[in-house]
Image 1 (spheres, rainbow, N blue to C red):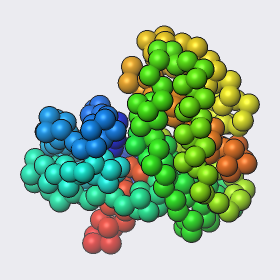
Image 2: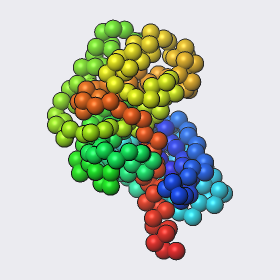
Image 3: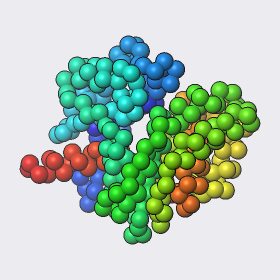
Image 4: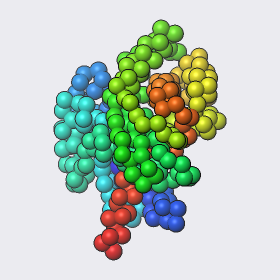
Amino acid sequence: MVDVGANTLRLLVAEASAAGLTRIREERRRTLLGEDVERLGFLTGEKIERSAEAARKEVRRARKLGAARIEIVVTSPWRNADNGRDLVVALEHATGMRVRPLSEEEEAELGFAGAMSRARGKQEPVAVCDVGGGSTQVAIGSRERASWLRSVEIGSLRLTNRCLQGDPPTQGELAAARAEVAEALAPLTPPVPSVALATGGTARALRRLGLGQLDERSLARAIETLTELQTASRARHANVDLQRARTLPAGAIILAGLQALLQVPLGVADGGVREGVCLGLLEAEAATA
């Protein structure tokens, strides 16, 4: 499957296994569609064309790898841009495939399903938090199905562009970012989960820094460390590319806000939206076999 997000276009090729899903190949290409959305309110022709060409190449790669079913999904860029439908049309024209634009609820459901597919433990209810570049999804429910789904229009790229322009960011910018997150999350009144998981690039980057459990103290320390460094040094410290290094503090601030809202530590999930989509494709393939 190909996932077109605010920061990145990603490919995941997977097959069914006893564990539920085995990854065959993963690729990513930075497209930064969310920068256009935040700055202009629409997607420039250049960004649309670049994303469509990237999707074409990844679909071709998936076919060469023997993928029996391929799906292209688009998350926040098509919802938030005035001309988001133009992106969908360009992707379809470039790939010759129908594209699935995800609603906020669908994105939250797929993230929940993907996280649960690779999660252990039996405690319920479970919360899954997915911090993307342009939006953040929260889903809570039993391990089989999410019953409470919400999306907020704040993500790591969007928050960075709005508040964290300094390199490194100033204390005033950090305070503004925290206030922005608090305002975005204030309308949410989630049921209290027993356990919570975080999925997405920010959570995985923090795990590589040794944070297997994201609680109030560990997130505060991580934010302090990351925001003392300039982007290039942060990239080396966290072993991420420069663009992820730029948005990592914002993503961590959003996760801190979510952790405070849910009042339980966040584990780091091994699956998310892409795994959720692949599971659906494998189920469809099995049903027609």
